[in-house]
Amino acid sequence: MGPPKRARLGTPVLFLNFKAYAEATGKQALALARLAEKVARKTKTTIALVVQAPDLFPVSRAVSLPVFAQHLDPVSFGACTGHILPEGVRQAGAKGTILNHAENKRSNDFIQAAIARAHAAGLLVMVCAETTARAREVAAFSPDFVAVEPPELIGGNVSVSTAKPEVIASTVSAVKSVNPAICVITGAGIKSGADVEKALELGTSGVFVASGVVRAASPARALAELCKGLHA
Image (cartoon, rainbow, N blue to C red; front, side, top):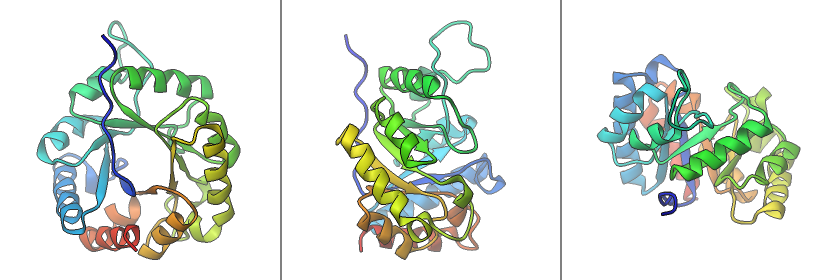
């Protein structure tokens, strides 16, 4: 008997990272998830929610959108206190996980092992990479997605698609040369529909956003604006 089948995400896709913001924790996470679901339905957009570990189960039960963990560990059932078990993430209702975010970096050895364990548990994996070179390295481990995120632009007001379009284009080329099946995602500073449209023009399959939506004066309006860029 093989591993459980992984979910399939339609592209273009918008990954919404809840991080550990107060506005996206606990009851607020549920409210934001429901808001995102309304926007997804209205705009006919694939939106994946990247939530904190304690919120995986309640958010997965509350909405029909795909839910991703922010991290997991390459461990198996047993004496692994404090680690995040891939099977636990799957049983909590998640469809996938993020690895190696700039705020939670890991070595290539860790990433390779974690991808293998996540896939064995039936989870999709998006690995974040800070440079084109790192994206090429992690692509060799066959994640489902690679997100290019120059760390100096994360959380800022200048998007990578505007400030460093060459990084996106070169990363798409590098990743596809290793494994054409991997989808490349644009992250860091994405704030407008124009940013999203530019990212797609450069060959990526979607965007990875956080503060531009979660901490916006109107998260619904901000999210709808980004979704508009996915369909331009």
